[in-house]
Image 1: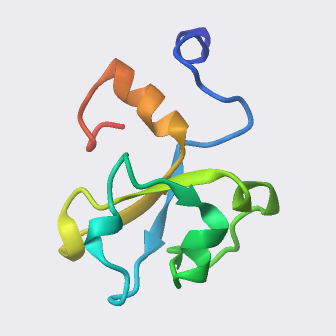
Image 2: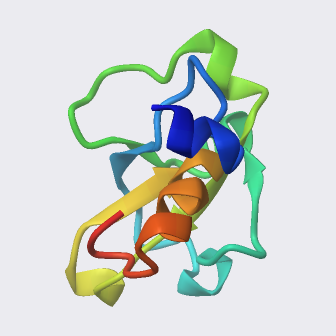
Length: 95
């Protein structure tokens, strides 16, 4: 745990969650330079794959859309903690 904290892991936040991305949301919004508040992603119609609500504390925080297999694969909204994991292993599939 100390290893990831050393690289910037924010305690109390997860790495991200799997989401359902509506067809109306452009794939061009995907990537590490396209961060938006969770509330903005929700306003676009993105929802958690498990149908649970995002935590209220996360709605004001930044999340990034990640679609490693494109539209045909799973999609995720990840937190900056995801990129801390990538410091250890740079593969999107690992993190």
